[in-house]
Length: 362
Image (cartoon, rainbow, N blue to C red; front, side):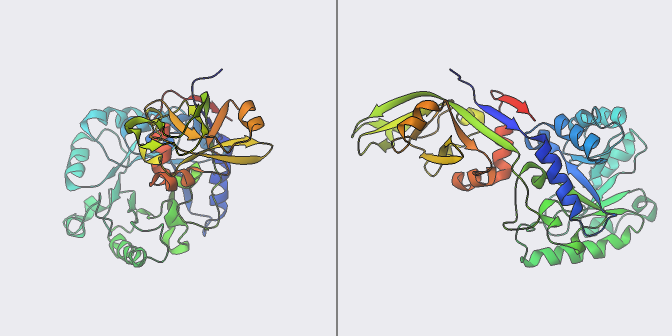
């Protein structure tokens, strides 16, 4: 008998996704960087970075914080590692020790970097083009001297609506980026992340920041190339029980049984990153001989368990399965996100933070 859920991570699939998108770039000179922030979307920053560094020749990585960059440096000794949130007092030593490159997003950060000067790297500058998140505004760019402008090795921005290819803001941001980059003629350029890459050649520039598509997410439906799923999430069945009409299931007695049936109590819950919003649309799956049999959620998700209705699962399949499947090639993190009312990005991040999983890598 088993009691802990399992998260199986396919590093070979991550490698395949990186190579597939690299082959689809419009210009051979475009550098395909890997975004491994948030512990590589929860799947293991060292494991992912080491695979891409050693097997794909990836030499540019993006993280969010300095300490994350230090972790990646352990397995990518000669890579360029950019820190998207920029430098802060709490991890300025990481920039010195591991030669990290900051992404500067405000005049205050620029002042802080120039005062500390922990290494000789040329920082990157984030510019605001329409997302209204981090980045120098046009008025702030205009105050920079030529000497200050020349200190930046890369100019980057981020698209707000790249997952909607026909959204008019994409072209507006591209036009703004092309106009503002003229102030930095010597710097490399990066505008596109995963979904921006799929908008085509005008958005790709010198560096593309591949994130979601490495990890099996497809932010733009029906786009080509298509990212392959990279995880398998399963959880053990702790108990199967009969239920009678009128009985309630789960906290709040929200679900009242209407007819005689069976339920399965599964050892995974919101403590493992399974959103409470996964009920009532969510489902788990019983697998047998290549077929998938759905068992709908019944009752609220609790910290350690969820409950599903197995009344329609054939007894021979029910009796031989010790685990149910929550994510696999047929029901991906994107599918899970739709049923939970969110997106695949959040699903991976939430699951990836779980410390109770038995993790395996292949």
